[in-house]
Length: 284
Image 1 (cartoon, one colour):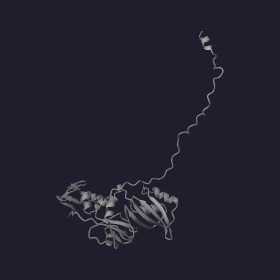
Image 2 (image 1 turned 135 degrees about the horizontal axis):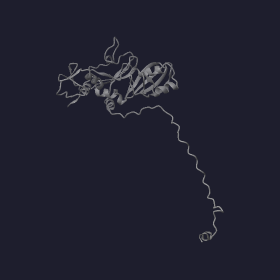
Image 3 (image 1 turned 90 degrees about the vertical axis):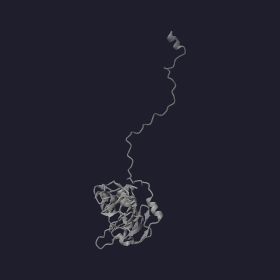
Image 4 (image 1 turned 180 degrees about the vertical axis):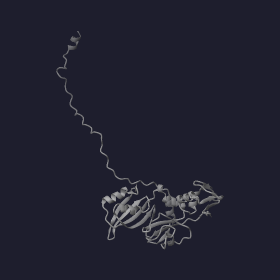
């Protein structure tokens, strides 16, 4: 059965559909020896599909691992100097891809999988997958700073999407916030805090869509349960976007004037009274 090449590449574990579309644009994919184009279809049972000259192997087994990424570990698959990558923490023989990357100094939930379709469902902006974080600030934010964060701030000329931001409490380390957002710009939480004059000391992702970190400790991992996988693949209702509260504009219509009070009917005046027979005499 013919399918679009980016879908076949994603199903074979070569990344998200967007990444596989880039492979096609870059001229790295061929079908039966001919350069493939974006949007082209092929049948893996009939056609020879290659990526960078290597035949496409259709993966039958899907792997889903939930990892607590510690600070100081790289989310990408490519090593950076002597730093560990997330793949160094899991005993997987398959080539897995991190879903929902975290920067070097951040920690928390990362999904590792070779399911390209699921990766696309979680990461594509149109699905607006919610991500929940615990954020430790060194300072105590005031209500003005929190409201600005909720409504969005301008970063590099573009306003960030509204987010749910709640204060969880104060500890000797600082103030903990709960931040829920569906946008995923690089370093977004840290940049927002810096723009508002705040400093992030710790950043922990505790939820990705329907997945939660639970009781895992840094460096620990576990396979997803079948019900968790099914829940992730289930089409989710589009979340209602948070909108800044705006007071209702005052009405420009003039207020209705009160009508005159009803008054009892007045008896006819003496001038309007007619004597009996007056009308008949006038006609004559």
